[in-house]
Length: 129
Image (cartoon, rainbow, N blue to C red; front, side, top):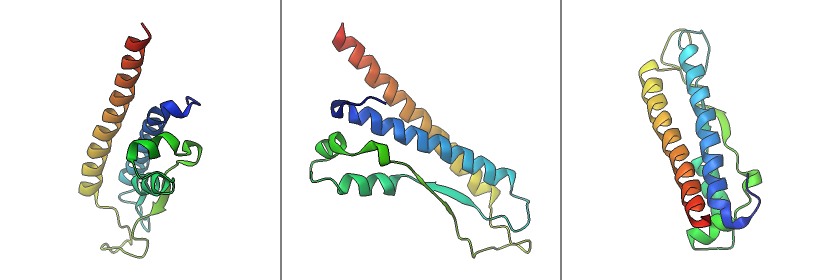
């Protein structure tokens, strides 16, 4: 992590990529436990956490808010999704089709975030030359 506020947008992208990777792992675990009795679907919330952190800054401009957000406390929140809900007799609430779609979506998000970080560093290298 870069410690200058001038590069906080890269740090935010880094945290988003970390959360996306963790969410992929959680979704894969849901898929692996799709037939486990009493298993409840897990998920990770990052976008809401990021929004709250950005809104908690004193800045109304999104660029200024990103520059001044404390990224050390920017971590996703893992939770059990619909803990009291189950449409199956074994009380498992994992829908394998939904999980596969969520996994594909999260993989695309992760690839996009990594590509954005790579492009930002490429631009920085070009400016330094």
